[in-house]
Image (cartoon, rainbow, N blue to C red; front, side):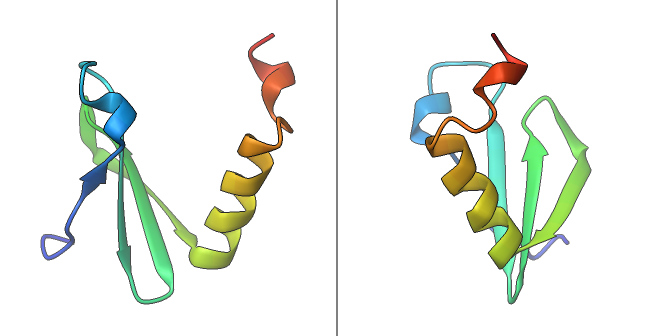
Length: 64
């Protein structure tokens, strides 16, 4: 995974902890900046479904 180009959210530029995303073919990798050794792997399809759900507020009840 050393060949991956990690991108951070533009919203995370002023904070110490943020998510970083990388992709390679059909796979998407997600890690936290404060612990880059733990990486979540998913598919592009599942990642896009998660992003759409987050934007639609489907997970808001977890933080309320």
